[in-house]
View 1 (cartoon, rainbow, N blue to C red):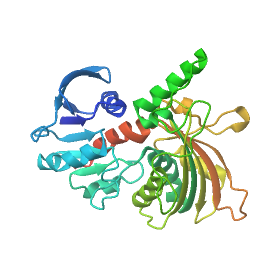
View 2 (view 1 turned 90 degrees about the horizontal axis):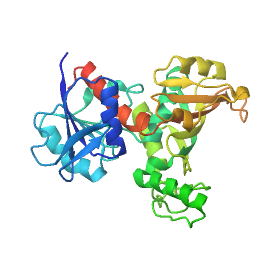
View 3 (view 1 turned 90 degrees about the vertical axis):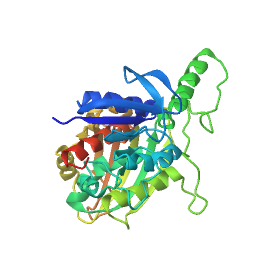
Length: 336
């Protein structure tokens, strides 16, 4: 089997998950080179790497480069990656709406990889989790409209967000004052209905607009009606979403369960009477999106509406795993 030289830019939580996922899935790596803003030895995903500082020759000899860093870093080094002949798989928002860059979840739109020009973008974590469950239903019944509410874990804001929640829990238990730094408001015992800045024209946050714009691009539905409210919740890891779905054709909850039970990357957990439904605690560390609470939308009488609740690990399904699966599909399709 041919092996591929893989680069990783960024050594945070997502970068660590990328290394672990490459190993867990036995991706055919000849080597992994790690890059960041300064040179050092660092343990990443259970392995010690010599992290090297990025320069114009860093990507020479590499086949695939996973970017797990900031948007400006991805933009700065894009041309160097492409010039070196590698394929860049970027987890930031830098290129998601670039018409020349495919935005891909392999279970949703793998065909878009065929026209890549050296760069492939990972969608936002909430979009990836949603579409994993919604795309199979769309293919069967034709999606028209989505009304979503997302419940996003503290770690979605990176290590500082998770550390702040953990510190607030410890300080609360010890009777100490709670500090607020990573978020605008205290998160413990609270919900914050704002993630990212607010768009002055629509009053939606950028996080909410990402879901609409990315879903339209990936499903090739430029007119898809989608409205989202994104909420930060005091959960350590894994995002959840409440989805109200409208289709072109009638669909029953049982049909939806059967469709989703056959879908790769989805696990139906739907027995509310027994207390079985998607929860972030159960999704944490897993590859699958959990789908449940599937029921007919009783606000309409045409059978074309469904309600559904999903949970997925945003560091895996929404980031690292998706990036590695993109790499796997590039290899499978002979595109790298």
